[in-house]
Image (cartoon, rainbow, N blue to C red; front, side, top):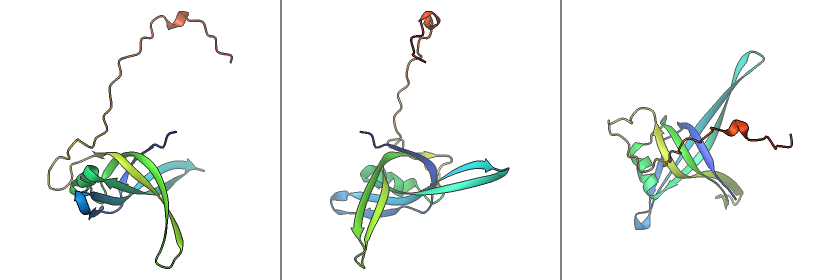
Length: 142
């Protein structure tokens, strides 16, 4: 089974940071993604908002470098949960539990470059050999 989310969007508010027992850190913020299309000659835009949650070292990086308006690349997974609010009404929440983050664009204010430990590692693949493929018979049924 696969539960994978990839987002590129702008942070909607500064992260809420919680420091808990055992030096556990949690960061929570909203992320907006946009899509545009033309309908009947008019440009239409749709913005989708996501709640993003980060833990431990990734949350510490978010605390230092992520601000409202930052452009972020996020990799993570969907997590749904429910809780009872103060009035006893059951509420449902779907969040993005981030596994990796990359700050995109200019450096954050203060001039410090963001660390790269949270950047997803992408291995480069060798080029695929295509020589001689023209002589392979096409055995596809369509």
